[in-house]
Image 1 (cartoon, rainbow, N blue to C red):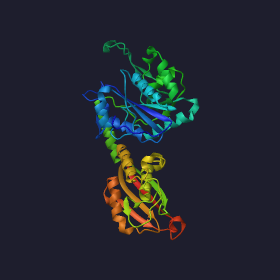
Image 2 (image 1 turned 180 degrees about the vertical axis):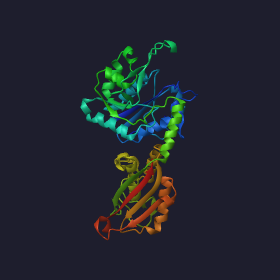
Image 3 (image 1 turned 90 degrees about the vertical axis):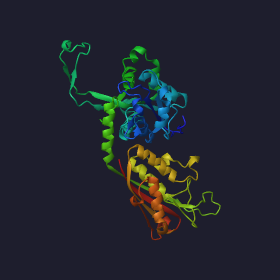
Image 4 (image 1 turned 45 degrees about the horizontal axis):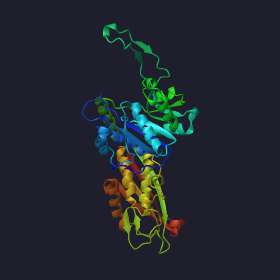
Length: 412
């Protein structure tokens, strides 16, 4: 597919199953490509994993007839090439497992329903940590929530209302509802799927059921009740209202810091025009760094990532990657902002402090506000640029380099 990019290396992969035909949903378009807000439902789901630092690869499983919808919904996301699913969910999961096994297989794999767009980073964290730590000897970790409603059992074999036996209450104590993601040791789940009989598979409604039958030790990890599966058009409407309710959101604050030393030699390979907060400062020694060494934007990038809980700039844009050699740091901000928008985040303001004895920042302040505002897609009035010195103390005071710190507020 045209949108495929190289995924981040990691021990945990996720298979997102989106090959169903949505018979209960109705309409001509499969539910995972229906808009949730103004973004396809499946993009919300995939984006939750694409942004998560623990996930090394994302393997979508789709229906072959949906390739055009899929390409539009996933443009720009770092995903493995999709594989075709089967008639049953289990067939699709197995197709995803085999696709991952054709390369260097991961140590762990998460299975997630494409129609669960509200999975949180905290839930993904809990499943991943339980897997990696082998909590209580578990080789499978299942996102789940305790049943809080009262339950009644009805004899569904008797279809006529007049012939049904009276409903009988069920004790809900200790009863949990399983969700996805469901995580496993990769080789164990693949073996279970490839050796189970069709008769047993027909009785398993999810991967946890199959794993239990195969003797894989499981543990339940708490999940949010908001991690619901979109099944009907009414569910999609409720999901839209939930997302709209989140738009009011809560503020999240991130702090970033960065520093670079000046190039000391005229033939230094890092010598390039000095860049500060997205603006070129002429007639001034440049800074050393793998990219353009803009400490203002690097601090801003870490502040954005920090607010959203997405690790740091070195994790996402490592200086060992030749793609980022001499790169404009605005590319980092552009990418992080795409992830932020997919998560429903809205920038409220950004405050950047340049710490340097030289150059003077005042002549460039308004240009910097405009440049940062354009990158964050907000008015320059939401951006503050200020400068300070360290009164000739420390490395900045001695004129050895420039540092910057940034604070951002994001409404999510």
